[in-house]
Amino acid sequence: QVQLVESGGGLVQAGGSLRLSCAASGRTFSNYAMGWFRQAPGKEREFVASISVRGASTYYADSVKGRFTISRDNAKNTVYLQMITLKPEDTAVYYCAARTFPVSKSVYVREDEYGYWGQGTQVTVSS
Image 1: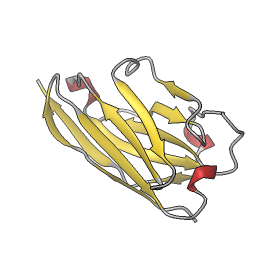
Image 2: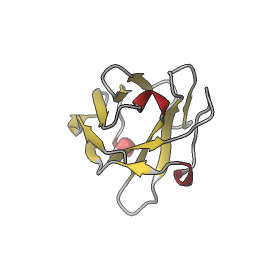
Image 3: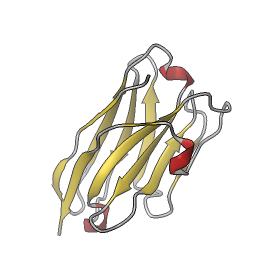
Image 4: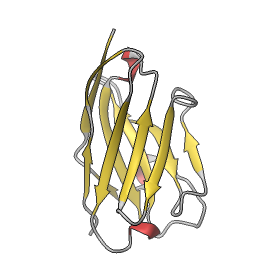
């Protein structure tokens, strides 16, 4: 079993920054591909970013490319999402997700490719 706990959400003004963290349980975190998704009010959950098992590969949704950075620290069992130049349309609940048994250096963008999810953290960007 993998347990994921997100933190770092909050209220920020447009143009501001936040860093989300996702702490994972288990001794095999370095074997998980990780992803961030978000769900805005009244909308379906959408892909934000993904990172491969050792961080060699990353992939971003077009809407966040150049503003968000996904990274991981396998020694701390944690994946991060650094968000800068935030916009009101970034307001959402942000979820981290883990995929076990990934292919090395692969990233994953579909929800059904992930088997474990955190409870989410709210990010609100005011205009």
